[in-house]
Image (cartoon, rainbow, N blue to C red; front, side):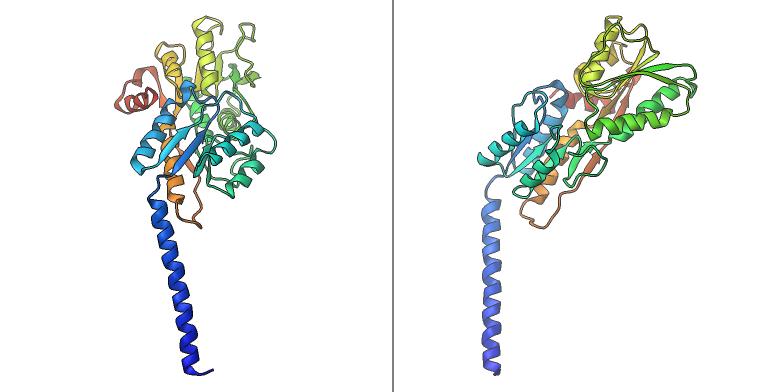
Length: 319
């Protein structure tokens, strides 16, 4: 091949590469001129436990220049209902979706399939019941760590001696990775410490006055904690001491009133903020994978409820 022909081919290749680069930059500039829309789908979106989470979403959207919409939902969405909501948000122009996975068979597969079309970020827990088994990224509290912290607080209060003590555990569900990790973290610490688990309630059963008397009632989520706080206030727990995990102003109220001894509070503000942040980082980066993130928690007692750090947390719950 002659040198002139080689030069012609190289020139053509160079021009082709330049055209591709220019087209890419034009597309990127066009996209950057449009405000991204991120839809957020959580269970029972108006529930008080979401106040700090939604405040984090709003602050991140404002800081990062995106539009954020929290979809109005009811409690306990099915996989099919959640899929329909996500598809509807995509049709209405959502560029990404942040979602608390519905419980049920096929949730992981459904979200993975949609995730091939637009970015999907999970919050609170993964779509798989097994820890770190999900292929989709998630921003969630350190659920195992919160369970561990809860058990350690009980041991501190009783100088490590729970011999002969009894306990009841209540959780809204045991069908999520979060609930299972909280329970596992809690029970691992108490193994061999002499305490006996007399009953475990889940699935929204609630606490009834006729439950077998125990020394401790352990609530592993906000709804369960509020239920236990109300039961304690009504003197329906036969003197049981309540420890639990919660993230609403109502949960804090029962702590302040002395109905709850210790409250472990996940940093829901940062769950909201970092989920938006991670989705925005994905914007315009075809080959960038969104990362899973675990956020911290705080242990609250009545005596430290109004410390500077805790006042910041309480502020986010009231927004």
